[in-house]
Image (tube, rainbow, N blue to C red):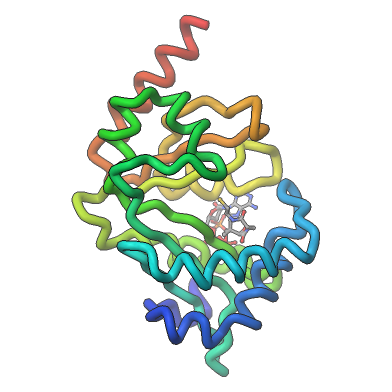
Length: 199
Ligand SMILES: CC(C)(COP(=O)(O)OP(=O)(O)OC[C@H]1O[C@@H](n2cnc3c(N)ncnc32)[C@H](O)[C@@H]1OP(=O)(O)O)[C@@H](O)C(=O)NCCC(=O)NCCS
């Protein structure tokens, strides 16, 4: 059962909680399989300050009784001109240009999801993911994650998210998941299974 209030935040509310969001990020991502050093949380905050201006930017947070975030999720609309930063080139290569356009462009891309370790396994991550993706146009939602053991794959699979690429050799283990209401999920998942079976 969720023990925190999960709600949408506008950019100014979100950035007003920057110090707490930084702490949640640092604690959530210092653990396996991420092993991120503490300074990566500063990099994240710097990104967040410009990400709030992206088209379709959406943020939700789980707030404790004092109004402090114990978890958060952010998302935006993937541009028609598919990005070439971070893990995007891998997604494009794995899916091909046509499927990238069809499945990912114009869809809601979940960028980050983090729950403070002291508050995990209480349903907060599931509530955040639902809140940040619920009103995605046409149900089209997607994200990158890592398939590594001890990571969030079990969480996403349990919530009906579907892998549509195989784990990448580089960045190691990264793959693309489509949300449970994405109209392309079944077809794309069957295609991945078929590719896997013939390799
Ligand atoms: C992934 C994460 C957001 C999940 O948050 P959470 O609040 O613990 O998740 P929930 O309590 O809503 O979990 C829902 C279900 O997912 C599954 N699940 C969640 N965490 C799991 C884990 N570590 N191992 C296996 N299954 C897990 C369980 O089936 C769980 O239901 P249950 O507790 O009744 O068995 C959290 O572990 C986290 O912040 N991890 C570090 C950052 C991260 O990996 N973010 C995602 C990047 S793509």
